[in-house]
Length: 61
Image 1: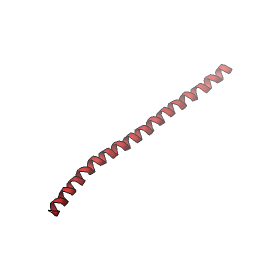
Image 2: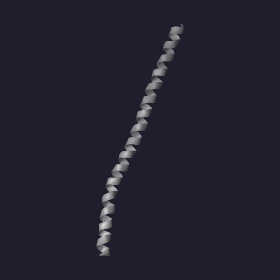
Image 3: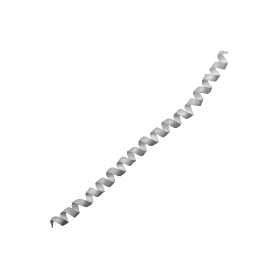
Image 4: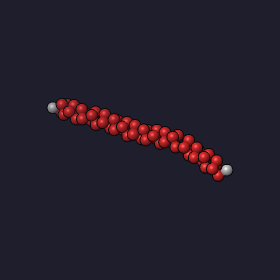
């Protein structure tokens, strides 16, 4: 009976570990995705800023 109880306890522990790993991966993916989005935004906005500054310089001159 005690051995059976241990087996019953063992299964939820594995499930909890699996959920914990999946949760960690999920959070990591979200952070990584946000980081990529930020990098993409920088690369998209940078040329706009550069072209704006070039246009402004042309108008100033």
